[in-house]
Amino acid sequence: MSTVGKTITCKAAVAWEAGKPLSIEDIEVGAPKAHEVRIQIYYTGVCHTDAYTLSGKDPEGAFPVVLGHEGAGIVESVGEGVTNVKPGDHVVALYTPECRECKFCKSGKTNLCGKIRATQGKGVMPDGTSRFKCKGKDLLHFMGCSTFSQYTVVADISVVALTDKAPMDRTCLLGCGITTGYGAAVVTAGVEKGSNVAIFGAGCVGLSVIQGAVKNGAGRIIVVDVNSKKEEWAKKFGATEFINPTTIDKPIQEYLVDITDGGLDYTFDCTGNVGVMRAALEACHKGWGESIVIGVAAAGQEISTRPFQLVTGRVWKGCAFGGIKGRTQLPDLVDDYLTGKLKVDEFITHRKNLNGINEAFDVMHEGDCIRCVVDMVNL
Ligand SMILES: NC(=O)C1=CN([C@@H]2O[C@H](COP(=O)(O)OP(=O)(O)OC[C@H]3O[C@@H](n4cnc5c(N)ncnc54)[C@H](OP(=O)(O)O)[C@@H]3O)[C@@H](O)[C@H]2O)C=CC1
Ligand SMILES: N[C@@H](CCC(=O)N[C@@H](CSC=O)C(=O)NCC(=O)O)C(=O)O
Ligand SMILES: [Zn+2]
Ligand SMILES: [Zn+2]
Image (cartoon, rainbow, N blue to C red; front, side):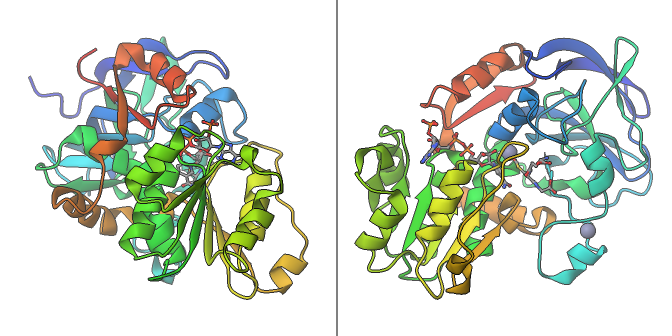
């Protein structure tokens, strides 16, 4: 029986309040309205940003909410006026939408789209309402995606169709972590051939920065991580050196400046630690070194450095989703994956089913997890 135009009841992992485990519930997912798309989610990754919002530290975090923003699935139905995807398409949800008509999209300077950012940040659809209900209460959407539900509704500008040749348990990871790190190196920094790079934090994001740096022909690729087990991971992805900053007897930035004849051409923070962000900036070469902030720092945290660091030519910048425009550029990344040019399979260290999604959060904090993929169909 067709579900088109009807409310669907399905399972979802609901975050009722901050700091509490997710609860598997039957929820009602409304039909997509104009310019909306209802997706059956097959797989979702779990990102540190989901854990960050669940912890209650995200100033934009509100509850009850359906978290998740690294998901792949198949379009079930579309609302009036949707032209970019159709039922049956294999898709990935995009927390950085791409409308192609707002000031941001038209600027050619950023991947940040302004069209629905205000409502997305409030956890509602562009018309200001929610498509999720549970026990008579509205649930909030998250990052315009809410992939911890078997069905979700997103804006049409927040979804990209991809070839069905690429397995969805892999493409889901292109919805955040891999694309973020890879894009930060290739698009945001534009690492040049032969340039020296340091990457702080070798999780999914940092390892993806390594991939981007390798692709662009970087010279030295130095990875800094407090977890020595990450050395093997970093080298597998192409790092040329690994340093555990707890094993050296001077500040890491001084050490890096010493061993690189004045500093790095590009550095990347992939930890979310504001002290690390400062070290990454100060490890840059005078005159031209650029430091890219990728990590998400908790509410209230601030970055600082001596302004002289900037006066003398170092550049501090940052990016969301690596600077990648999802609808335009994700299909090419999938092609790169299918032709063996982009590692994706290698990131999957753990798998869980929807019923075990809280374990996915547990393993993420254990240090040997790069990404845990959650099967949303088989409970
Ligand atoms: N800007 C954006 O668009 C996006 C941002 N993010 C953010 O990026 C960050 C990284 O994500 P992800 O790769 O998944 O995270 P992980 O936790 O998997 O990786 C971070 C790594 O950094 C290490 N680390 C922690 N503290 C330090 C330190 N002081 N010096 C060096 N290394 C350190 C961690 O070690 P240990 O495990 O021992 O703590 C871990 O190995 C998160 O803050 C996440 O929220 C994610 C996606 C998109
Ligand atoms: N809501 C937080 C900031 C969280 C944040 O920085 N989100 C990133 C993506 S992190 C993905 O895992 C992002 O896209 N930021 C750009 C945006 O427009 O949200 C806060 O308010 O501090
Ligand atoms: Zn993420
Ligand atoms: Zn836009």
